[in-house]
Image 1 (cartoon, rainbow, N blue to C red):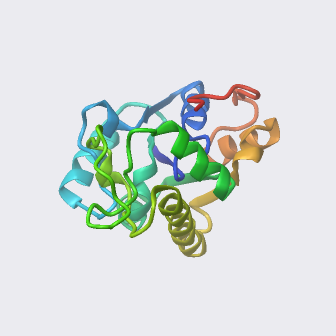
Image 2 (cartoon, rainbow, N blue to C red):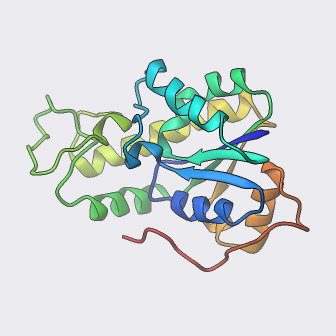
Length: 205
């Protein structure tokens, strides 16, 4: 069995990636188990919560099993150490587009500004997704930009460390057939069996 994880900041095509992988034969893939009532894996590593989701995934049937979720970035060392045959796809969207898309998607939430910051305002809806993101001493939109910076700075470190097991594609490349075929081949699905899904955008703002 091969393990697969899809990562990215969010608002970068991760839901579309999930639906693409889900269409492939002999694949069992989940989207954000933490959003469905499972243990949320937080930004600051919590190995007890990670172990529960990891063991659940590892025991699923399928040639390729995995999850698409933003929050596995800080667990990649552990993921690669535990299972040799693991592939991770990271999606990357333009910084400003990502920040503004998040801002529009969460009008009554601010999950990126530190609660002790002078820029933080108590909003009517602060839910359990908050631990999945880092926090900054900055207004929401600037905090989102800082989140993007930190996320992909860390991704670049892992790309150098695990060049054959982690790959990154732009959101634009994902929206093209050739990009999708490259991603599917990377996780172990040959072109002869690959099912592409071009021109369909999921989870729009």
